[in-house]
Length: 317
Image (cartoon, rainbow, N blue to C red):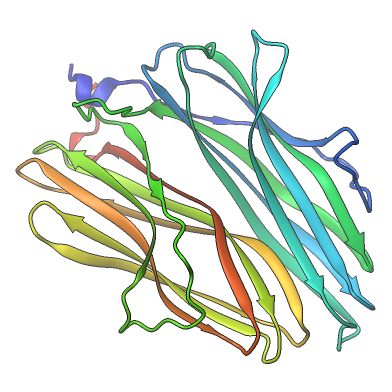
């Protein structure tokens, strides 16, 4: 039996709740619980928990200065403690700064929120992760709702600086906060947003799932558009650099509009090396074009890599 293939890891499906959402909710009021998932990390050394929540926001806006802002919060509750800990907050927002030029705007907006939690020895083995809404602001919203909600928790061994990279494991990346240019072409130096390095031992045939998430704020005026391009690059110790994927991000509106929305990109590849290999994955911004007087920001960035055994080593346990 190989320890490299038999370390415990699992995914847990959580429970979602159907609840009626008010037009407005203040932070001083009790939060609305959307979903929760329970995990037990007893048999996993140095555990990481990757929590993912997804949904679709459907809404219809109409009239003068329509607005919809929803603030989410992820909390962690240790069953042996009376209090919950706030892990992260996210805000979805859409606001038109003038009367809509069309009768109304009907939209079905996907939302994905993810958080990588590195647990320490002070946390018990039994934990509840809960996704809540803590604030709602609306104006001239004819209707809105949250559909197709889902929450999962992937519990897996983290590296925590260990010298051995026994599979499977999860690695959280570094986040950078550079000054973002209003104009950027592929001939310019790319802007590094996040980065992580994984080490694969020889003949492990590891498969790696890269996940990048963030929120993009777009303040669109005049021509009311922005064009952004993101790129995933891999640089390895065998002196190779490869562009793995590019993703465009485009927003165009007929009115002056402010919008803050989630962005999620995934990439999966399998590495087959006969020698020890170290690879650095980097998410870059390589293009930016905005209409006059428009603005954008990329915030709440996160990058993770989940490394698993490749198909050639399945069934060793």
